[in-house]
Amino acid sequence: MKLADNKATLSFSNGSPSVELPVYKGTIGPDVVDIRKLYAQTGMFTYDPGFLSTAATQSAITYIDGDKGELLYRGYPIEQLATDCDFMETCHLLLYGELPNAKGKKDFSRLVTMHTMVNEQMQFFLRGFRRDAHPMAIMTGLVGALSAFYHDSTDINNPQHREIAAIRLIAKMPTLVAMAYKYTVGQPYMYPKNDLSYAGNFLHMMFATPCEPYEVNPVLERALDRIFTLHADHEQNASTSTVRLCGSSGTNPFAAIAAGVACLWGPAHGGANEAALNMLHDIQKAGGVEKIGEFIKQVKDKNSGVKLMGFGHRVYKNYDPRAKLMQETCKEVLAELGLENDPLFKLAMALEKIALEDEYFVSRKLYPNVDFYSGIVQRAIGIPVPLFTAVFALARTVGWIAQLNEMIGDPEYKIGRPRQLFDGSVRRDVAPIDNR
Ligand code: CMC
Image (cartoon, rainbow, N blue to C red; front, side, top):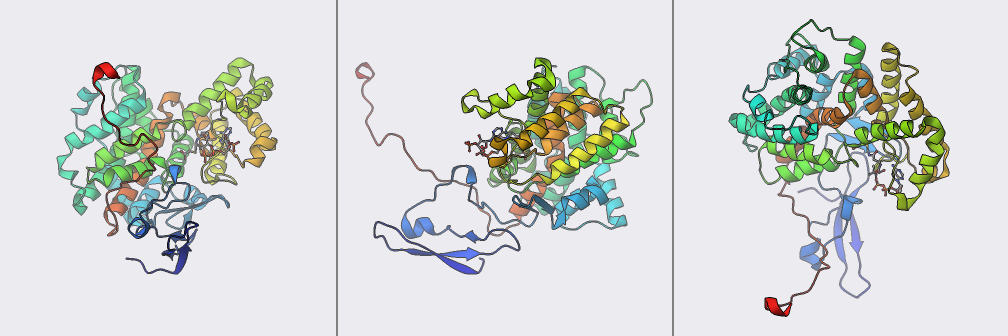
């Protein structure tokens, strides 16, 4: 049990005795008030829908300062990791707490590479889906189904099982995403190639065919690697909290990660990159840059239900540091592919400019988030829009598994069981059916 750094006193206007609650300090970030004994002491719960003020766990993995626009993985700024490291180093950092040295990196990359193939039987499982199924529908099924194929890594209480499940998940996600894509376009699956990098291998499995050699474009490889790094973890977001809650019952890691995939699918979370691109397409179809004013008007009208997708964030209230890095990558990729005049990118830039100057967005501190640009980059690379969220899931898998394993190793962890403020009917009796 932690030692309190401070104490808070909670008093009640109805004369009930006040209670003292311990307050703990983190290494950085807001202090927390420990309310675990509140119910025992007062018979009351706290009420915090959406977890606006609730720390559901302690964690040493990722830190976000939303006001400063700062994102740290294990203390390292995202800008440095995205510029000086690659995704494999980032995975090592998130999983084990430290960046690897050259040998550590080689060994870790090799370990991941040696697990990229999936059980051959998986392709028959995939065949059960309609060809036009959404890739996230396929991914929720495929990831959960891994637990039916890898029985020797399903015991969440066994540290070796946890370790091997982590490597398997990181290694196999690109293979599964590429298989989901190939299935929908009716092309043969491409087996992973061990001489390629993690991102290069994904490009190969996505875009190569058995008919001719495929050469990985290093600019696109680097861009994809950066997308993976920027999406690798984001502390206790909705899908990560889902993974923790699901895993807290002791279920196997593949099932817990499948729950994360399902949560990520929603348009308020990982589905935003797809939604942002669809929004740009719609504005483009309606008349492009000229129609931005009309669109912004709709966004500001609460009754319209229209949101500016790719804008706003629960935590970042200054800017999303990932968005800056993604914007840089966006420019590099479009230049490499000769798409600098891409109308959708120009539209995105114009929309961003107008929104950033508009009082509605300024007063609510709404800035572009990473998804505003990542969709444009992915589309330029040739990744189809419905696959965007699956690529996000691929990248976030390392964060999910690192957070899940951290929770299992935490002596204070318990099965997650939120409480409620009940506002339904009080007790009543069932009337005979003819009298209802
Ligand atoms: N367009 C228009 N208005 C917005 C938007 C937006 N994108 N985002 C927030 N607002 C308004 C909202 O209506 C509210 O206005 P008011 O105070 O007048 O009621 C105010 O800004 C505060 O917003 P909120 O909904 O209370 O903020 P939240 O923290 O609950 O929501 C969010 C955060 C990300 C769900 C929301 O900003 C949103 O839906 N954005 C669009 C979807 C999106 O891009 N999501 C990706 C997030 S980044 C990737 C990830 O980490 O998953």
